Length: 578
Image (cartoon, rainbow, N blue to C red):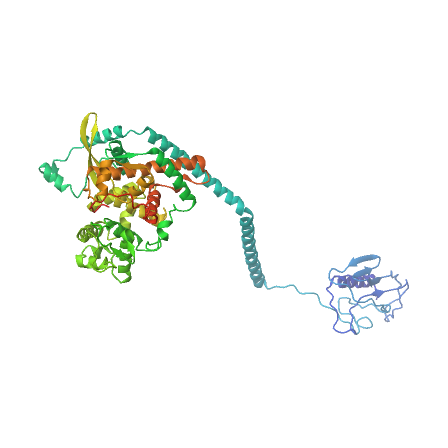
């Protein structure tokens, strides 16, 4: 029996087909159901069974039509969400409605037609989680790459901005240094040597000599003997000693106008790179900061760095690899190292023999020996034992114990190593009375600090916050250059002694005045050069010059113009101090 529910079933089936994901058939001969049409209202003629009575029911028109992805059902249009239909076909009117529309259609409608099943959703939740984790990892990697890319672009964009920031910082540091320098200049102008000496004398009298030694009362001379290795510091360091000596000088004169002219020559040397901290390490005979043996090498060289000349005008000069003086010593030590001799090891030279040292320092000219070989052996034994006993055989440990202070290192060297104690007693007038003041020069001790600073270029092991406290290295060659530039003038009596090549005793008045005046002139030169740079050459940092670099400049000038300076005699002293 035909019932209106049959029509509802057909409509429901059509709507279901509109929601099913349709796939293109494998062959053109097989198509899904795409259209169902009843063209007119009519009463269908359905054959009835015997027990049924004919009942006529009106049938409303039903249309199923597809137009490029649209499905028309009656007068309503629905869009297929997946794919458009391939083709529209007309199928003859339904001659019979199936009793059970849920089952697959048979007869004219279902013949040779394929129903496409719906798409199955994935049910594997485990693989879904893995895909999610992989996607999260890819997102993190992508973000990291984008962050690196942004940082790279930022660095490229901000390169010059950061350069400006660094320049501003350097300018700020330079201004602070200039202000500190001006303050030091003002303090130096107010400095009174007499007041300083008087205060030091009061301090000396306030600290009496101890009367007991390790719990036992001993005579004064025995206590002084016991304190010999402990060393009692001098009353004045080299800078103050030079000023005091010049103030009480009798055999020479200092000329301030000539110092100002020399300052202009020094500034020219700075511009022409004649004065540069890198000059030390660039020399072929000197080690570099990368060399592990550099600290012990410098200490060994400066321990032997004294008196390279031989008395007598006809004496043959000591030469090694064509070098004379200090560089001959450097060449000899480097030659010994190439020959496999562990010369920089304190364990070796603490027990070195005279014959061994003579072989190490052998001259290019046969029969010529290095001067003062016995004194050099004694110095090596002395410093070698101290290094082994107190610093584990490494001078680097001695430097690090001073915590970046040049003054502390200077004091430690002269306290621990007696052969570095370059001192003298100056007699002078004060308040109408003659007093004695112990002054210091410390040529080898100061050049030891200066060589460390130059070798490491003021960094690492060579970084000293108070490097300005180090003065020039008062020897017998730099005074010759200072006389050449007119900053010093020897008196007639002293000039006559020098021209006759007479030896000056170490610690005599004339020798002290020459060395003390040299220290004073270079200190004044340093102040004037920095003041001129500050006012006339703002593009050059005043910190680029100190007494160490000025000494290097003057010493190198003497070597370059040796023939030109021969007319000026230099003082000669047999000493282990310079």
